Length: 608
Image (cartoon, rainbow, N blue to C red; front, top):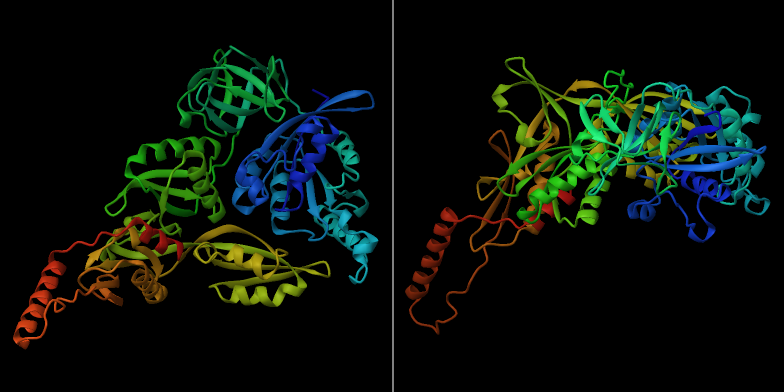
C-alpha cells in the first residue's frame, strides 16, 4: 500500500483538467498511442461537445520512479458550479489534490471553492499553474506586461491563497506536456499513501455507481479496510441490503477485471442488485459475515434548489421516463424526482436540480440516451410558506401553492454570491449586479488586476434570470462566480394564474414576487397571443392574481365570409346570415374547449 497514491485534479472550468489527465495517460502508457484522443476521460458525447467535464472519472495508472512501481489512482473532476457535488464525493476517496490554475485567468471563484472543500478533507495540495505555452516571447510582444511577469503574478496569487512560497508552485503546459513528468513525481513524493489495513473487515465507500442490465448496480468504491474477491457475499450497511460481488475490478479507465480489491484501492464491485435505487452513493459495503462494522461517514446529501416539471410528449412513455430517471439517479445522486399529474399535460415528474446547467444536462441525457421527447415547465426555485395556523411548508411548484387566505408569510432563499473579475470588466459587471435585486457586502482586491465582489441576492435572481451566462458573456469568459445558500428571507409572493377562454391552465401558473406579477403576466399573455392558433370565436387570454385580472390579450376569431355565395338581393337576407354566424360563434364560445398543442407550452417555457 506504500506504493499507492490516490489523488484528484481540481480547478475552475476550462483551466485544463482533462488535458492534463490526457498527458498523465500518455506518460504512464495507460492508453496506447493509437487509441489516444483528446479529453479521453470525458466519455459522454455531451462532455466532448461542450468541452466540459460533467461526471467524475476514475482511472488507474502505473508509473515507475527510481525502480519502484507506483499505482496512481486519479479521479478527474468537473469544474462547473452545478457539479460541485461530484467534486466533494471524489475528495472523500483520495489523500491529495492537484490544484490547477490557468495562468491567463488566474484564481477563479471555483478554484477557491474547490480548494476549501479539499482543505476540509485535510488533503495534501499541490499547486500548479497551467498554459505557460501561451506565453511565448512572440505572443507576448506588445501585450504590456511581459510573459514572465504574468506567470509570477499568478504564482503569487496561489502562494497567498495557500500560504506557501511562490517557488513551490509548479509551472506546466498540459497541452505541450511541459513539466508534466515533474508533476507526476511531485504527486508520488508529496501525497501520502492510504492508511487502511487489509487485516480488518471490509469497509468500502461508494462514491459513484451506474446500472448494467446483466450485472445489476455497479458500485464505484474506495476500499478503506479489508479486501474483496469475486463471488464473496456483500452487505450494504445503511440500506441493510445483501448482494454478491459478481465481478470486481479497476478502471483502466474502462472496466478491467481483477482478482481482488484491497485496502487503498479504487475500483468497482458489480453487486448483482437489480433495483437501481437501492445502491446509494455514500453507502458503506462490507461482507455478509461482518454486518456490525461501523459505517464510513459518507456524504452530506445535496439540496436541490431549482425545480421544473418534465412530461413525456407521448403519454404512453410515462413508464419509460420513470425508468430513465431511476437509472440517471443511480449515476447522479443530486437528482431528485416525484410523480405529478397535470390535466393539460398528463402524468410527469417534478424534478429537483442543483442549477440550470445540471437541469439542462439531465434533460439532454433523457433525450439522447432514452429517446424521449419531453415537455418542460419553466424552472423555479424553492419557496417557504407559513400558514395562518403557523405550519411551515416548502413550495416546489405553483400547484403546491395554498389559498391566499391561508397564507401568513412567504419566504425565499437568499444566497451570497462571489464574483471574481479582471479590473477592466468591473464597470459592466457592477451594472449587471445593479440590474438584479441585490445588496453589496464587500469588495476585495486580489493582486493588482483581480477584484472579488461579494453580494447578497435572492436565489431566483440567479436562476430565473440566467445570471451566470450573462456574466460570462459580458466578461468574455474571464469573470467567474460561486454562490452559497445563506438563509430564508421574507418576500411578498403571489401565484400568477393564466386563463384561456376563462379556464385556468395550471401548467402555465407560476409563483412570482408581487411587484413583478403584472410584467410577467403581460409577457405570458402576449407570448400566448403569438403562438396559440386562432379559433372560430374570439379567444380571451388573461393573467390573474387571486382572482383579479391584471393583464389581458385577445386572439381575434377567424372569419368565414358567409356572404360570398350571395349575388346582391335584399340587405335583410345578408343581415340574417351575419346574425346567424354571430349567434353560432357565441354558442361555440360558451360550449367550446380550446385544445392547446404541446408546442405552445414548449414556446412559453422557452421564453421564460
